[in-house]
Image 1 (tube, one colour):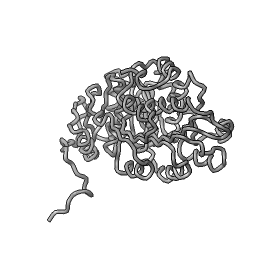
Image 2: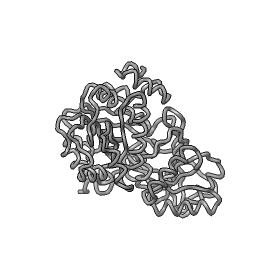
Image 3: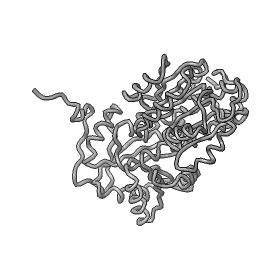
Image 4: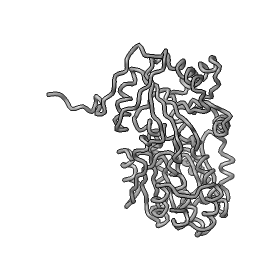
Length: 397
């Protein structure tokens, strides 16, 4: 199947060719026709499946046939959880709209209001925004919603995880009732379904890549190691395997800064990427990482959610994530577009329950490998796939 069979017009198809894509992914094949028909959509799709284009392309197609926006008005609203993701989605829109007259902008917190207010003065066709900044500028009457035709909630699961439910409900309450609603999420958890139920009527539901965590092109393996030896192990592996690039996940901002300093002492330069660093610095780090100028990026889970790098060769779970779906989000950063990727996890005994839940989510055990000189003092047991958290266990008779 080609993009030309999906009902897209010549200007959009020309822009797609300029970007270098020729065949739609599974999510694009399924979602684009549904959106073009004006239907509401709930879609489960992991990172790296071509999700962004699956809603951007049909939205641009629909908007290109309508009237242009008026002052301080917008026609399509895309709500995302992070500044980085807002910037990246807006970049995609500009690429795909390059052969049209449609306009877009990204809006997010942590920067001065005035440039964003000025950008809204003449109105934009597509606005990509984080929830908090959108509500702030709506309250300042810098933007109006009465001409919105379509709403996209992108990475809905992450927005709920980050505590944006009240903001999302406020936004939905202020939008016209008869608009098209699209919700995209890596997982359709109960909270996401509750949000969909309250916000979207009569939606088509599709699911892509439910088992992408087990894709054969992502080589998953783990190393058992004592907690106090993890930084030494990471430095050893970087030097031993001569990795050209890796995205290293860690749980806290403090931990990221500490690990970067520990690696620096061992002669390895790595940058910490988290919400404690300024937006300007994070944008520069992201650009340098994409360009290959930075080999090793240490990122918190929240900070890394918006990182989108097509050719990332590997991810390292320095800290094993919780919940299990977060593991799927993380390893989805590699192995994109059917390229090979590698996902390596460091596991100590105090991570055992996390490991059980992750392997239960995957439906298989993750291969274990030993690194000479780093055998743990505290052995990590082989997990069981039917692990049930203590608070969910049935009481004993």
